Amino acid sequence: MTHPSSTAHPLLWSGVGADSASHEVGVRQELETLYHAHAETLLRYSVSATASLEFAREAVQEVFLRYAELRQLEPPPPTPLVWLLRALRAHIARRTRERDRRETGRLSHCLVADPAPSPETLTLLSEARAIIDRLAAPRELECFLLRNEGLSYQEIAKVMDISIGTVGATLARAMRKLEQVLEPREGAGW
Image (cartoon, helix red, strand yellow):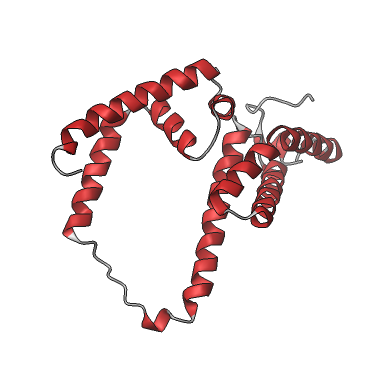
């Protein structure tokens, strides 16, 4: 598939000043290629996050529809798989919140919200933020978070555009740093 690079002028991708029929065909081919390359990974992630195959399939389909809408107006993102994963995570979170609101809506008059977190919660959040800040470089943190999302080393390598060996080394380095940060806290009751 050939298409202009992502540095092309955005108007050429919106159909203004370009043949919109050929643009549509190019976007359709791009979507088909992306779907065949990443749908299984996205479905596996979605199932692990939702524990529902039906919901996972709907979520993956919705994310590809959103990508198609985006591509009608903008050039392709630099890393489409990263965009798809972020959109999928956001879609799952939004639908989960909607479901929770529906389920608790009948009882909402009984719920009492505490707008201020407790001092203990604030202390834990502060310590967690300090650990994350000391933990790793952005690459190590991203790799660690993707692994915790359930992605395999191969999938992480594809998302981050690095080799599988680099994924392993990056995760090992992040784990060593995490252990060093948490060791002093073990004696303090953590």
